[in-house]
Length: 402
View 1 (cartoon, rainbow, N blue to C red):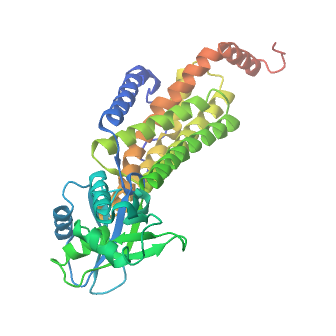
View 2 (cartoon, one colour):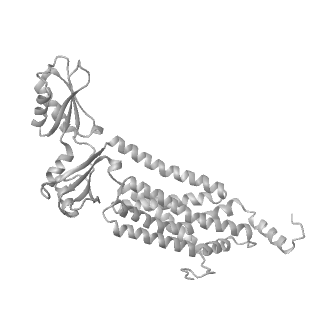
View 3 (cartoon, rainbow, N blue to C red):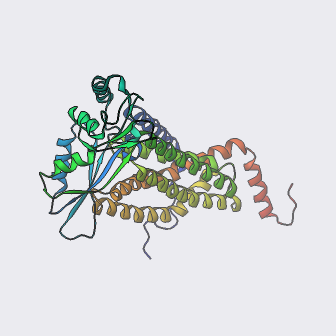
């Protein structure tokens, strides 16, 4: 039978704890500094913006699309991903444009001044809500007439300021003059610019995420991670005891923070898929930690050994082969996602898991186990006496030990 680790290994893991404890603290603090100083590259889901699916009627490379998008939206964060649809002869790309507002404050002020100059006292105010995307709302006073403020008049005025209008429609009550002005927007601008690559290019779908929704998604994603950690803490406390739970949770924070810092360092965008990857990583890491803890608990309860370091070393050595086999096979699957899923969300997920697997395997041994040892020695100082009584009872089973 093939074994990565030979049976009955006797690696002294606990003997290296002081050195690796310093390394873990350094990595964790460094990760927090990276996140604080460099920040996170928030994607469309969290920062707000547009997601547009383009269909080309001829083969077009991702490099060509990416270069054209950068030319059209200079200075704006954009991303291009290939998108597979079962339509022979056609190429699809998902374009993300991280611009949460179609109009800036200066543009809104300019439009409002133009309306005030043109309509005078008949004009009331202009509203632009970034959550609405490409929609303006124009309100007139009661003195305004329908003839003087027709949809065509409103459209012509907006277009004079350099904004293309898709359509204008009257909204609100019958006794007031209120118009909704729908601008041509980013989608039409993108399609028009892409005609250089394919005159027949079209937008199959357009989605807009406003800044408020993005903030809510960001907060909900963070809460999802915190809730997962809290539930895991309760689970470990019920399955084991107080000595195990803190080590498991610190281990998970250690893995999640370092992985997040790595993604921040390489500029990887944070999306809902990233949160899903981190939650999967948390689940994988706790699974590995539970296996080690289960063996430690079994050893502590059954052995007559009095030295806690030797107990922990034996438990980790016993599970080392299983840990490495699981980690390597999972890592190979994640590497396959990175290689064959380039340019898609699968590659990002695979990268998160790959980094997390390496960090998680390390932390199960050098973070969770030493934390258990620390708590056991500090809050259960009579363990050696208990172990001695167990040894005496095994030696003299008929003699009562008190």
